[in-house]
Amino acid sequence: MIDYLIVMWTGPDEGWGSFWWGYQPRWGDSTYLLDGKRLGNYSWQWEASSPTVVIHETGHALGLPDYYDYPTTKLVGPPGGLGGLDMMDANTGDHNCFSKFLLGWLKPTLAATGSGTLSLQPSSVARDCILVMPGCSNDGEDLDAFSEFYLIENRTRVSTANDQTLPGDGFLIWHIHSQVNPSTGGLMYNNQDTSHKLIRVMEADGLEEIESGFSGDAGDYWSTPLTFSSSSAPACAYYNGDPCPFDATCTSAPSVPMSIDVSYEPAVDLACFDFDFIEVQPLCAIVDCLWQKPGDDVIDPPDIRIRERAFVGDPVIDLQVGSVLTGVKQVGAAKVKQSVVAH
Image 1 (cartoon, rainbow, N blue to C red):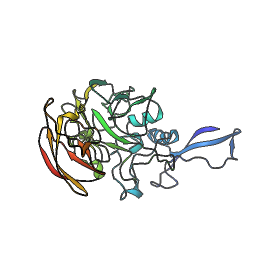
Image 2: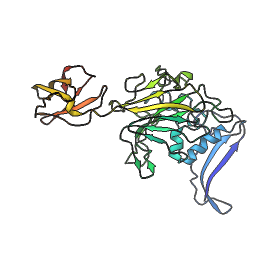
Image 3: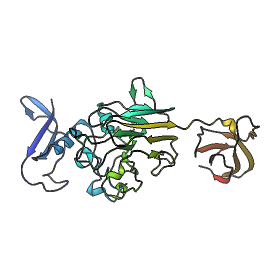
Image 4: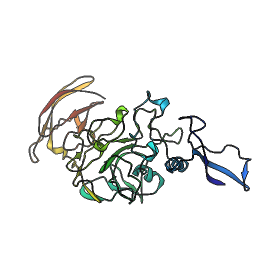
């Protein structure tokens, strides 16, 4: 088997999706032999002064998807792709750290609990990146690349590396949702026509220009004094809307290397919450949620109980009233009185 064959042709292309364009299929005729060997994957692209199209198509041969929005899907799903900030988007720059993670070219540093300062070399010349998300863990020696998490990498441009054509310097933060579709064995989300993206740029300036179909720019890169958190804009959150209880604070300007502080909000001692039961209705509960100092007497009515974890800051605290699942927000040390609709 010939695993991969690159075919170059000369002449003008005829536009996206045409025969005379660049693409990477698998050879379909198993009886066709080259030097006695069957042909597997091949790529088809025009001759150019730059190898970027070949690099992009070879990414497909290795298993990477497109990260740009197709012309045929611009009105379906979230627009903008990665704003041209990646080799698998616009044939530009280096492969991002998620692609390298999928291919086994790097192993992210896991930051899932506690706090600490991490120093990252530019990922165009080093295998540095950080994976952050509560609950993520090592499976033996391996990290799970097929879940929901954030990746942080230093994309400061280095004169000898591949990112020279990108528009800025600093950290890029990616929101990844690489869940596997059990019915197909492929990824459930993509950057073309699903409800949200497989990989999304968290734009540091909060303008969401990429999500409106514009190109990425220098404002999308993170550096001091910016912090990415559940209260920043953009905010770190799960796609189901739940906040992610971590802060990532940039502590250096774009440089080689760059440093960043990652800290997780500590779990709240549930004994510090006073839930004063008021009324239960068929689809909602009305409660007072009062932050108490440790050591104070706690009123914990037996018909309202904590269902899941809670975190300091602005978390959702899940309660169960009888058989009805409800949620109430605890905001710092403030008292919250509200009607909470079951979900």
